[in-house]
Length: 293
Ligand code: NAD
Image 1 (cartoon, rainbow, N blue to C red):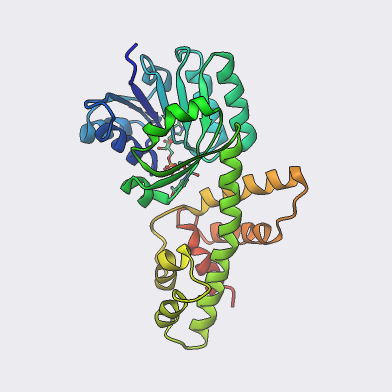
Image 2 (tube, rainbow, N blue to C red):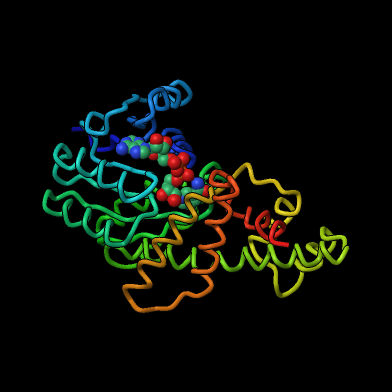
């Protein structure tokens, strides 16, 4: 077994770019990357652009690898990959999962890995597709210090900030916190833009002024003009944000923590889906707001 063979499983909007950074910025030159996606042709397309070896079968992809990176939609896919690769991964391997999943799902896979001496980190990310493409993601990890120390340098290929938040599941809880903090903010932005527009103001000018004041935010700087223009063909889908809101609400329920604003925006995102907006960026909350009167 070579010591730095990496497998990347899940070549979607995020994983595609992470894998590309790993192939080009490996700490040792000529790092071999095996890539895998269940959708036929995707891994081969990635290999045509970046080199490496393509697989559609996760168990075959991790053969001879001691580091596995995953970027999968949700718990169901994480468990499917765990079933496939844990029986074949070598002892001492490291698995870094960048999917956003439940904290409990992460803990279960961490425990199953530990039985086989495979270290598992839950390591969800923030920063979106642009962050993945530019290699500037923020990673919030949960797991063992030793595994984190091994993973830190590898994640440096595509992340600008990497932090160990606590034991297994702590990365996912941090990501949920991030989503709780941002959903209400985006709905408030939609309401403000709709309000200014309805009042007949030059809304671009309003955004410009507000960006210098107390309501400025990343959402306002990066999304407000697009929301105003009704452009949603990019970014983080309504479907994925609804998944993340669901994870946060389930976790909050288990702790008896009320999340009234997050609950409300979750219902609004369901209405965006009903409008046909599953694949739109979730800031299409603006579209729902505009159609609400
Ligand atoms: P995506 O749906 O584009 O990519 C997931 C990929 O996994 C797909 O290509 C799919 O075919 C593949 N896949 C599914 N099951 C598989 C299996 N069993 N074996 C191999 N491949 C499999 O999703 P994404 O936008 O890249 O997001 C990935 C994760 O990152 C999600 O959990 C998401 O919530 C999170 N995330 C996404 C963004 C974003 O802006 N897109 C931002 C932050 C976090």
